[in-house]
Length: 400
Image (cartoon, one colour):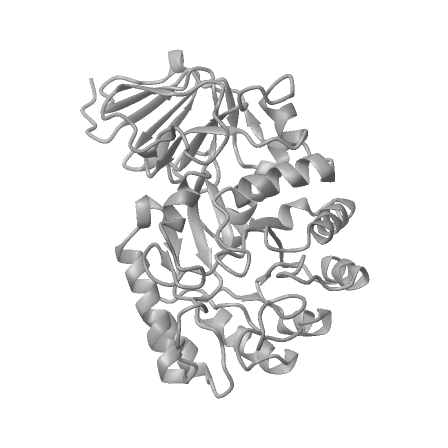
């Protein structure tokens, strides 16, 4: 017998969703994790399940990768002054999200805009979310908003200090394509990934970023291509899809019609792998604990995308574009999962049909790095079946 103190076995899985667009459903009923990473996937009879510290009976429910929110605006810890709200990240964990990507810590009151100050804020933000995971959620933060006057050495300084992201280009004083392109190139040179604000002003004081600026800037991700909140005209959105090869991020706090246009255009181009999901919260629309789940259900039901593929938009697609080690059920990747089931009394013959009819699934458990972080969600509709911990510590939290 093995003696793995952190070994996790999840058995009796009814449906296994991989997060991989090219193979969204896997034929397996058991997943094993060791050291916080996926060690084996297959049929229980063929796997070494002995010596596990934790055993979860999935009770025939669906195992999927933990969701990734590609666009959030954290500030410090699990508090957002934008909405005077505590524990919004914990609430989002109850929506199946296990990883968040900062698009800039812009809602900090008195956010410094001088170069020394913005670099200091980015480094501090990167550090405090590296050192503290609210409710276990992985928050990739420390995303400076570029300002006029920054030079190449500033981006090297940021990269040397561990900063790996830029906040939304266009939220600072740099709003022209030529300047943005130079700074994005400097960031890319030092391994810093970039995103850009797309569409009309989000709040008073911000400005329009149209297709010409987006194309000129050439960021790694086209942030909220469906607007945050106001979208660009249809022809500009189609142009961005056709003339750019970067990630196409659609968000909950955007124009839903424009999100569907983006997905339909990406489908026509044979490039659905470019679509990734965010919430763009907390912002004027507040925090959306179920925002990624709602986007998956909306795009599946109104965009005629099979539910198992729509789920990939918020998992594997985002992981690949964002260069993350989670979001896909595959050996060696982070053991971040959600166990979901068709919501009680929701229409549909099974969970995938129910989602494609526009219904949210119920979450029965959320796991991060092989550790159970949440039992039955307090935010989703109740799942028809709930996984059970048959060995190890019972699931924390949970709904009522």
